Image (cartoon, rainbow, N blue to C red; front, side, top):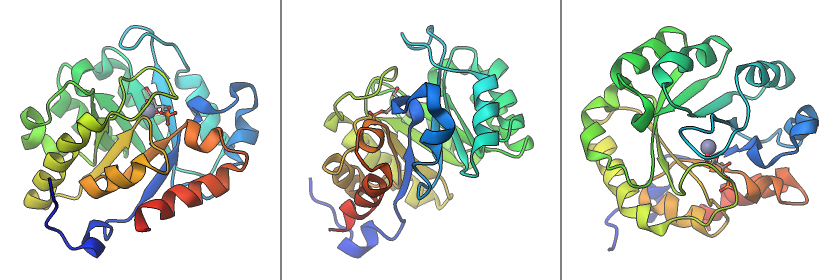
Length: 229
Ligand code: DX5
Ligand code: ZN
């Protein structure tokens, strides 16, 4: 499907790169954080082995990361019962806290609670979750995350089948005029970032593409300029 927008307009939103420390060395987090100083934020994947079949880190580690870097923290909660656990991550100083729509009993109330703690409210959708039922909630959100892999693990290939959903979300956001960041997470590389940006995403999580590189800061710069080429 072709895209009507002029080429420069597709990129006027800007490109924000959020490296995921899921692909970093967890025994050396402070050093790993110091290798991504040119990032726009650090993406922190919290997994509970219930919502996803993997277990990573929780609140004490997020608090330690908060002390170890000046970068904004973009916390991605892949946990059940987000209503109960998410607000503490806002209190811990995360710039944004993203819960999964599939794991929140009252997403609207939770989004408001996150904002009341001074955080940006993010909501994530797994690949098979449609965006349409959530479009009326957008004005209560600061960030919409469309997963481009099944959540749980780094290093999976980008799902091109999600591109139409990204386009539909972008159209809804542009139509409503509410300033919601449109984030994609999973399989973002120098190749796939172009397609995701063209579809309308403006915040890009990248784990293996950044920490799998010899020079993570150079990899961030390459990702940031890739959609502009
Ligand atoms: C997957 C996580 C991602 C992951 C992305 O469930 O939410 O943030 O770290 O890793 P890559 O970029 O390697 O797909
Ligand atoms: Zn993530």
